Length: 356
Image (cartoon, rainbow, N blue to C red; front, side, top):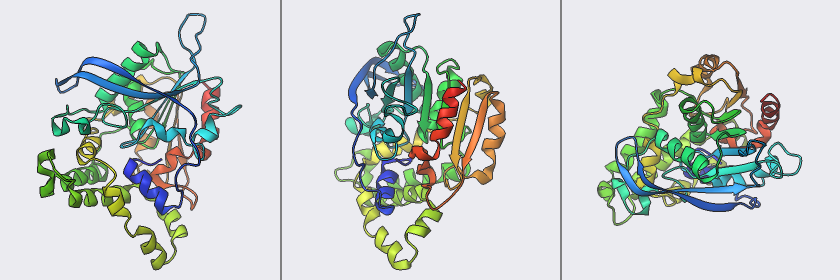
């Protein structure tokens, strides 16, 4: 729904969205990778790659699956967020819709460190291998090929971190998908304010005496509150919030208790890993390897990927078949979280499928 589960919960409360009206039915499973080796050289005897699927795989004349679509979630989320009927699945997966599940086989993986996949809070805490985005991509590619028998996706989509993973996938293996739709990210090294607020969130948790190097007996509440506040600020949409909360009383009433509730919802060590896993990300030098059709979409009210940097306009020219779309800011958009509201970019998805 938004960049992190923390942000998603907060925006739902702040914007009055509430819980999803209903969820699209999905099958869940795990692909277990033995002796998974991370980029740091660390290994896990078993890495659990969790996933959800909707629809049925179809095999072409060559025997290969030709209708698979993989959609990747943002930092702190899981594949479950794409099963919401009220803003995502209900706009895309039904009969006659762009990703009609009678036609497409939808794969919704949980990234390493998230959801039902292996993560620090399973027990290893800060001894969990220091994964990065390339590790997440390696596990997902093995899942596709070894578990699902998918050699090439019909479409790869991703929101926020999933958007960034799309660029890592496609520069690591340019033939992995016939088309790409990255939503809400920039394909450059995380620097400036984007890295600073992430690092400040990590430092806030580690500075709490209760954290105890990750071996805490009780959650480091003060550190979590500070991190939640930074995460909240990164996910907010100023025009929409001004429209929804036009008075001091309305704004303060909406905020009351939210940071405390957010701070109680996620494991502190998991958050540290979520935010630090982007430390090695920088697909920019390899973007020219992406020659398949790409429709890359950001929103103008995105604090995390502000359009004033003009990075997208520069980087999109490196990909010969890429188009960049900027959704205008309005009282109806959702800041960074616009990436998961399909009504804003559904037409662009239809056009991408048609040209690929």
